[in-house]
Image: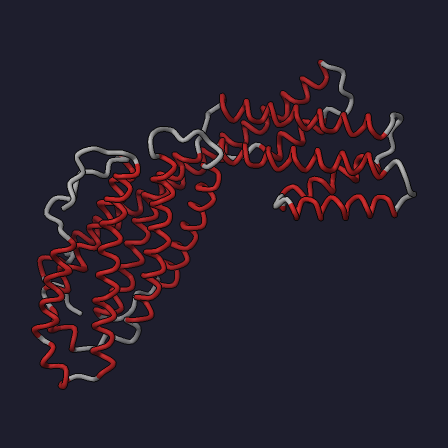
Length: 380
């Protein structure tokens, strides 16, 4: 497929685009390195603070608090809350079963029964991430030799874990705080740019030879979706941050996953289509829609980054592009007998998927604007 001349990148523009993308990747890499240093420093501070507090209060096994702080302190506040919840529930369940089963039976049967019951309970309660922590606590309470009683050892373990969790949450909140919802917002903006790159790679195969890095683009997009899904789960443990933040982020994440599924279907639909001649009759309308879909991805990423969705993109009307392409397909329908059925089916599949992507992009902006309560929404 050949796009109209005024809608294609010139060699100079393409070189500028690649330089900008390279600079963006380098900036992201530098940011991740800084985040790694900050997270390492926060973890070290939390562990040292736990150990110092334990010594001040005469807790001889205060290192368990430091271990808990190291385990639960994550890269953002929401993930820290989630990990803290899993650890404290696992510790309480493990301490309770460890003490209860230490009152009867003999090792190793009472230990085996305690671990089995704890795992079953965690499974029934949907606490899969807490089950291992419960098992660790049971092992400590029942197998570690101590001069005190089992109930005192269980109580100390719960107290030390509480100490580690409190310190970890305090450090996560006060020292270089990082919110999952903000990371998710930036990740979603980048996600739609990555979806656009995947879209361009797919359409390159329809225009000529398939993109050499198409598989890599697909994997990068899938990795971005998974990363943002993790941020979405963590953000649910944080304060909303304002009207509609949680709803808007969840909606955009869902739209991103849906668009990815459509792109995968589009990739299959246009496979081995670079020699098709039927689609050439759909120019320039087909090229206009493709180029405007690319602009739509970029504009939506800009909206997410600024968290403003009510302003429609200037000089861009995807619904009008879709209508013009449908009219063009009706005009050339009488020529179908001159082409193979496979070519015609691929062209119609391409048109269907492009229409779906265009409407998903528009809906992403409009529905998110409604979710966050923006006024004066223009429906164009």
